[in-house]
Image (cartoon, rainbow over all chains, first blue to last red; front, side):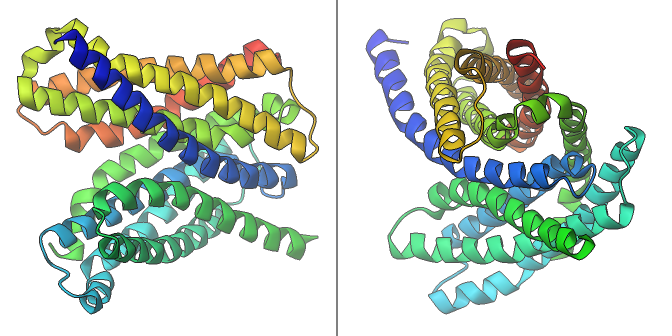
Length: 192
Length: 183
């Protein structure tokens, strides 16, 4: 590989990647702030066992949903803007909701089993409820935002693939942490 | 593709990666003593894990493109692979250093007690670079094995590296923090 091309590639990658990483990092610090609040409230024993799995689930499903919307746009499945909503209500959203329902209950049960094995006094009902409600709320909120983001990208003549996935995966963590925080706060007030 | 087909095709990999993510959560729960002493660790954790996943995935995407252009023998061209890894590692170094400083600034503004500066910044930087280096090695192995088996590496790199970042990133970060900060 010629030295000049190596050097220009080095600078190009460094200059393009670093700012994007920092913006994403700041967004995810907000997620961290919410997690820290949940941790400091400490009303639901063992909830930290479940959070990485819920975030992984939310981020992966959102990336998949956004990628499908992007692909549908590229193959011309959308046509005019009104058809976008039709597309949104069809297979991709149904699949996303079905996966969220199945996998959030699975995440709740597996996390409960792990927490119980570790000797944490967790409640299966609480784990499954928090996993299901926060994931479903996250799916509805973040998927709607994804559709809006795709529409905006198309209007601004940007490729939705370059915009939707990185932005929405960063948002999905924050939305999930916010919903979990709200649920924990509600339980905390009910139990207090 | 119908929504049922999408669910059936995607479900198995999700079942495995979610179970592995629970291990990461279990490790966080086990490290509550360190986190209780320094709650800033939980503030940084999502950005740390997210950063590790994003950086590793960017390297993987660039590596996969190179494999497509040059074939599986690309894995033997050490200088070319190092040239791809070098800017990624430099960006990672800047990212983890600035992330640690921003987190300290946020904690300071919010009025929380701060950990010792150098050990905290050192633990974020060292564990970040260690996780990314391991991620780069995993990425090369996944790409090479996929090509050897005539599979598309793009289908495997992202889920494997994201789960790897969750699991290994959490373990490395919390262990390095415990050693450097004490706890």
